[in-house]
Image (cartoon, rainbow, N blue to C red; front, side):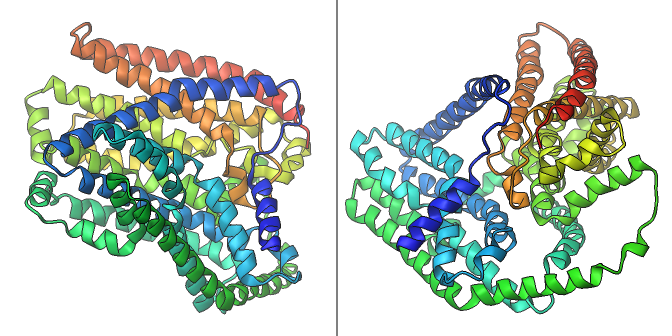
Length: 553
């Protein structure tokens, strides 16, 4: 246990954000973080809490509050599983400290327990906040005693554990089955195949979802069809008992929920005892062979223009790294699923035929929603993919390479801008243009929406580059650490969301109040984006090169 606690504290320290080398910029950085928290993160949490409170109040009127709350927790658990997969994979098998830890007299279950616990505590901070606010909204909506909330605090901490345990066990078996064929280099090559499969799955899911009737599902749920809940109870049993414990104030159910989570955790350690070291040794053994064989491949290198090589270098970093592939590239591929679900839930009448008729009838309300949708997606996607806000952080300890190569800094940051801009633009247009053509949108509108998309993406990319060039996270052991708790992405996301609120929120308010017409709002949006891009380009031209020059390596 002593070894477990010592290793856990060590790994937690390694997962935390780096301290600044530049004393002068520390205060300004904290001001940026504080402003993002106050004007973006806090309002989002407030609206999330209000939404859950409103939903639980309505469900309570028809005696479905407990089941609705349970369904919400199951959905959060599913998201936890999806986002934990990459974290567990990188921390257990691809972090650079593995090579140093393997020769030490550490039992595999102890090492896995320490790494798992550090990831569990550090990576789930935001998830814990959302869970706590959901519980708070539930307690207030049902007017439960306040000590129910205090009681739930113990259970909340353990709720995401089963999701991460599932991820770990799946990874252990997968790595061991494929250990004779896999190396870190091979896994990176699989990334391209994975992208192709993912694109196919996105189209397949969109096709399947097109026949999904959300209103019918709600009616079936109200009529007693709780298939989803029954399946989820089997997969995440701790969630079910936690919901029962919170609703009744039962200490027994809360303790039972925690106990079940710990049983799953112990089972994972049992599996790790027999599979973890075999899988790790299999991968590192293959890596050693590939390193030896790669020493004779220098003759295969080709001389190209510096800007081309630089561009390809950044693309290879993004696509060959499983971490960057999942965190920076995948969102550009899967975003239509979420947009489609929003349409299905919030605007179920917006079928293809409905939109075609709206275009034929020149429905101004439809055009207004399409405009807001285009602007919103074009801001959110480049903000969430972190391509620009981690552009310099991805260099890590190789930052001296970009600082000292015979290539102007201005040319380098423009190339990084192009990488972020092009990937985000392709990720949006590859879906939006076919969609516009399917609904028979006029060519002039398509051109206008493409221009707005370009302006929004470039605006967000400039913001990300400016922040990351000033405060890059350069000290990290593995790719996941370059993104983990990297506040640059959070700050860039915050200011991008301010632009989203200004254009989408402000536009909705003004048009709803009949203060301006759709044409006037479109013109205002274009003017704001053009002026904003020009100002950000001039600031970037002056500041980013200066930031690179003065960055301590």
